[in-house]
Image (cartoon, rainbow over all chains, first blue to last red; front, side, top):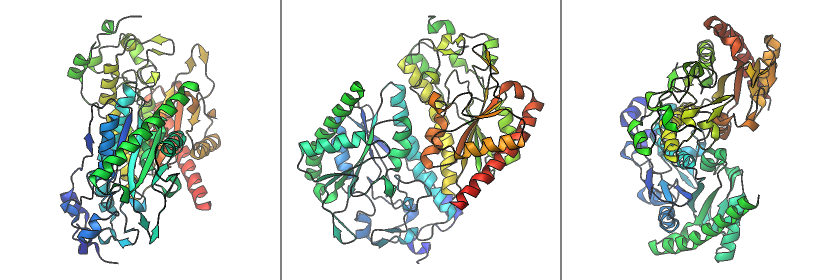
Length: 272
Length: 272
């Protein structure tokens, strides 16, 4: 195991206290009138100077382990098309993965797929606390603020998180192109899946390439489920959104899919 | 229905924007080492000047409809005895009930038990939003911060909310003296109930005088359940804690009860 100092990260609580600042989530299209709140936890591969390079090469910091390539572009495309507010995290998930609770190993992973993350190999308790306060708390407060204010206005927002996944994982190709993952309440995810199968040629699957059992629905579980809000996590294979044009085309398809899904759950709500 | 102006409350969004400020929760004993986080949503009957007197008499603003009399004194007594951090709300639940979501009628109730609340009779959407931003969001952020930082430190906190209830409700006397109410996970509440029956002479009941079905477990549901934290809501009949000495005596009893409950769930966790 390499020492954290190899990665040029602060090594004790004092250094971290000095380095500490809040990394506020970015909120776009805040005056949007649409019912959906778009959430992109893995939008950025930015590693702030306080954390050096985490001991990674430039190529590794561009890879899917650091972020979800293409997810922000698709999210922005959806935000325009659906008139939806968008919130995204400003730092790499290797610093803090906003879709994980502070005590989950994946919140500050020491290993991601086939890569060790040297800067995360020996995280002290003080460092874990500092990252939680610097990244996770502002993130959680920001998203909760969007949700609670819309609830106060008599709107019942719908929470959709946007992710991308690598086409080859642990050397194995993934056939699924579009995954819809649900937390406790599957009804919006099922509506989205049915719409995707109707409207697109995408290989679409429920709870693939992983599911809530893999602890990937933290955002939904903490922010949407307790308020009883419809919610879903979307996963797009990143080779399908590797260029700006491809991301725009995907946003075209998924905007139609989400709109059809919304119509369906509103129909169900009226019928019940 | 009386107009909101009778209650000397601001009547439009502009007035509210002018009046708006954040009412931060009060956090005491923040360096406490105990595992429990004590939460007292109804600690105060304070109505800030922006909301006038809500159209209520002084006697009404001293009554249980405005707060949970005695709950803060018991909470402070428990905080000392259990070495537990305590968070409590700084304004009356008639301004915003921090144990309710922003779209619940009870968040800014127009009626409470047998009393109309004139200042809440005609709440505009803008006013609902303003109160949510002024009271609920700082409250939720404060409590979530206590929870998430403790989780980051490798502690798994236990969330206990402290309430009191009126001995006579809608003219009917209540026999129960101590209620333990659970959200999705009953195991800590059951352990507390068993401890109370063993250690005290209190008439103790589960899910009384009301239960999660009455939407009273909002704090637990939003803040504790999603993280899988043990949690319980305690309800104490307020005639039993009407003086400082009585509240201290109750804190003595309930500290022993909570400690026995904690030992029990830690035993269960080890056995599983």
